Length: 419
Image 1 (cartoon, rainbow, N blue to C red):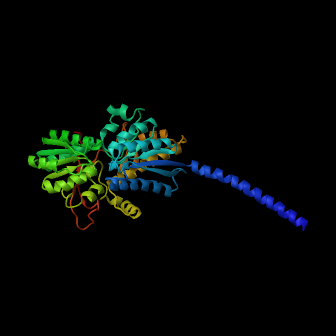
Image 2: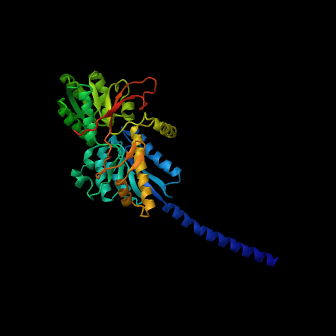
C-alpha cells in the first residue's frame, strides 16, 4: 500500500509538472499568433445623413478583408479592423473634428498599418496632416476634393512630404467639369443657378462646375450657400424661380441635398437639376424619395460597375452578406481594401518590417488588378484613371424605390477633362 501511494504521488507530480510545462507554452503561442496580425482602419460617417451610403462603403471594405482572411490571411497575417465613426449627432452628418480625433486614435495603435476612408473631403482635410505625421496611408473610396492631393497644398495636407492620401476615385477637378459639359452639350443648358452646402466637398465641386460652365458658354446667374442644419430653403428657391434659369446645380451631400430636393419639387419642379456624388446613392434616394428625386442628374467620380456582367457574382455575394444592394462606391471601397492587402502582401514577402511606412511605400507603387480594373497612383496619390459617370434618377416601379442600382439610370461615362 505504501509503495502504491508513493507511485501515485510520483505520477501526480509528473502530471502537474507536465501541465505546468504545457501551460507555459500557451502564452508564447498566443503571443506569437497575436504578433502575426495587423490592423486596417475604416473611418466613415456612420452617424447622420450620409450613414446609409457610408454603411455600403464600410461593408465593401470589410468584404475585401473578410475575403482575405477566409483564404488564411496575407502571408500568414490575420487582418483585423479598427472601425471609427466620423459622423456625430451634433453635426448631423460627417464631422471634421471627430475625423481628426479618429485619425489620432489610428496613429496611436502601432498595429494599424493603413486606413480606408474617409468618405467626405471635409473629414479628409482634417485627417490628412495628422496621418502624414505618422506616415499612415489612407485610401479614400469616395472623397474627391482635389486640394488634399494637390502638391500646391502639400505643406498643409502632407507636411512630411510623402503622399499618404490615396484615392480609388478621381477628383472634382474632373467630376465638376464633367457635369458642366453634360449640361451644356447634352441638355443644352444656357443659364444655371449654383448652390453649395458650405462644406469642403460642396464648395470645391460647385467651384469646379461653375468654372467649366462659364467656359462652355453657360451663364451662371447666381450662387448661394445653404446651411445644412437649416430646415427651410424656400426663400432661396423662390428667388431662383423668379430668375428663371434653365437649370439648378448643387454641390453638396445628403443633409442639405435631401431638403433641397423635397422643396425644389414644390417650387421648381420642371427645372433641370443636378449635382455630384454627394447626391448619388441611397442616402439621397431614401431621404428625399420619389417623386422629389425624379429627374435629378448626379455623377460619380468612378466608372459605373453595377451593370458589368463580371461583377454580378460579387454583387450577389455582397447582397447575401449584408442584406442590402451595393453601389459603385462599395466597389471602390472593396478596391481600396484590395490595394492595401496587396501592399501588405508585398511588404510581408519582401522580408521588410510590416509597418505603416513600408505599407505606404508599397501602396505608392501599386499596380493592382481590382474590380474596377487595374489601379495605380500618381506621385500625389491620385488614381490615374479619371472616369466620371453620369446618372439620372428615374422611377422604376419594377424594383423597390430604395434600390440604388435600378432607380438610377446610367447615362454614360463623361469624357475626362479638366475645367
